[in-house]
Length: 452
Image (tube, rainbow, N blue to C red):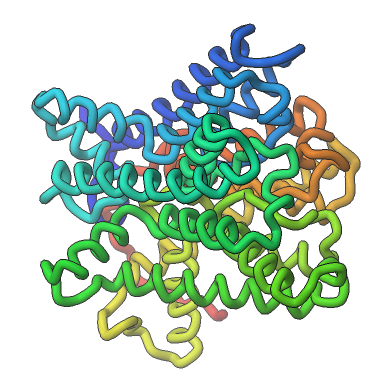
């Protein structure tokens, strides 16, 4: 039987491989849910929907919580959450393939296709070597983060507990999860230089994507003489969005939410929040105190997300960059789009438009549905929906230490679960699994004239 194929990143990928990736995430989420429901994993009562929500948030590296991680889960439960974050950040199929490589098992063509799609690798060449570099990078970065955070936390708690907090927060930060073992997240360290540098840089490195990290490594070793257009876009857009987020926060909140802080705390708080806006759910300020204007603008940052092939979700900064460039050249009347002295294919520009359009429909529809079901303030509901889709994890809160989702009904929580899942696997993959894929037409009709 002829199997349908779908074109991802210019490479023909069987829908079967796409579905395997999606189903692997579903399987991991359900397995994590069952583990969290075990008596040894939690304190008190834990309902299925709350366990499913927590597992999904961990696997999809989001950080939204309806149970206090530090209070409602035992050390074993916290370990389960951390492992779900680690595996979910990399991708279950990628982790399984790496274990097979370590056992010196042969990797077939189908496994390579799945691995290529999971890692957003541009081709099949050097895929196994790329995966080994990815794992080495993860270990090195997380260990460095763990050591720095452990030493910092050691000043506030016993060494054994500080080490556990260091490991957990390093894994959570690099994988852009935002889960914290502090009930107030990082609010207690708002003015701490070490925390405000270490956590954001772990988040940035994880959000850049494995392809960018690997390319920067080779560029530093002079194995390559030029960074790819993809890497240049990711680095440029990341810097612009971080600075823009800081400026918006400082300008809108300097004499409002930031009023009780001294000037250097305001800058640190704006820097920390701006980094977390797009990719992770750590916070050093109470987001419920932010102005409506700031909450609204922040939804755009959360929708954008991070770079492809990393631990962040959302539309992705490359899609937004190509869409903006495409609009600019369209307004100029130029049909040949180029960026960093490289031509950008029209199908990539069109794909960027499609991703933004489809993602917007999903988020708007979910927000309207949540508003009708929950009867809660629209802006905060929109903020929560965008945070879920972008796998960000920031929330205006339930009035306590939990996310705004804790106020939702079971149907509302299920909606957020779907958004987190969709944001992690990507809108195209989600749509392919839900509605299938149309076979590419081989018939070309005469062009029609349409007035715009």
